[in-house]
Length: 490
Image (cartoon, rainbow, N blue to C red; front, top):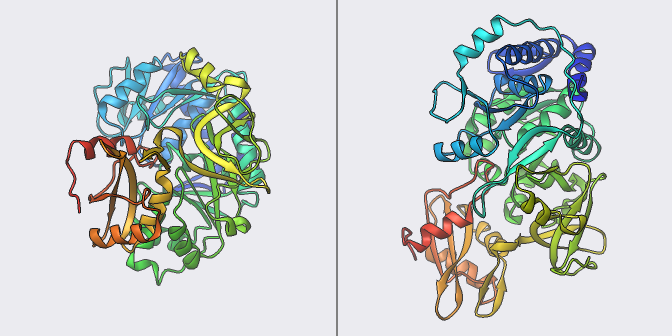
């Protein structure tokens, strides 16, 4: 039996009839979850799926999604996590990239180019014919366990091969550094997509006996209603979600029980964090990771947020350093690429040996993030390696400019890109979204707070910015649309 399967069975013995998952009026106990995942595993094997086969999961946030995830694990199958926000073309690409045999879908059967399509009615019939007895599937800790994908911020996403050893390392890292005090009295609210970062908090909740509350889809008003009515104690939000929450009128009078709000997936603007801490108190913990090192590179704990702007210090099990382009490790204060080692890392990119070798050159995973470390071991991210602009011969890091823009009233999202310019090389252009934004005043605000070469030369206000399924703003897509001239420039 795999170790994760054993953790599920152990939680059932320890917490039995206690609520494990709640979704609306539906409640699943720890014993129920153990039974349901065994039944799911047996149903998939009865279908003819064999150990190591890849199975896509394209299900909305909910109990059924988590039963599928861990049922696949118990069956020795490899989960391919998908997101409903992907386009049909993106979904077909991902499924084909890893040779997916079957895919679980929601209410609509899509033409996904996969051998076996499993809509809810078919899954229900398979489950009805299966028993819930554990079959003791053996799986090596180092064989493929699940497949994730890079964010696609620089091109076609690559499939990331993650092992059970890596999953257990991520679990250990969370319980050691990020949510060390999670326990049976906690209620963790999954408001972000389970297919991405929020799902990483389910296993820590499971093994410690905490209840997971699942929200089908995030919106600020519904979040406030659910968090207050259930007395949720913990949650995870991406910074954009937090910024939207801070604009919700109902927030002012809401009575929360939240004692930990984890955040990550993208950097948070200091102005957004300052407002959030003023409203919720010192309850925030930041986690920095990427698909190749899921959620686990550095962590900024609640009592360390006087260093806002930092992404924290390395998780206990991670080695993190700054490296120059020659492979030399750099001292504190020097700017270079963030690199990392540890048991949480991917095994490889699926069927991409050259890309794998490039990512792991010199024995370190190269993150593609530019940053520095201070004398106390705290790391600071400046930007993605490929996102830096050169304007008039000077380096411009978009994140620094975006932080200034996000401090302006009404701005919820911001992306800074370089548009081709014969004089400047990159003309600094900003795209923002939010409420009642005065674009000329925003330009003046930025110019008053930034060096001349960093300040945007132009600005556009869009209804929303394009984002990856993980909630990261796609600067590449912003730049493409801006270059094509589909923006309104002040």
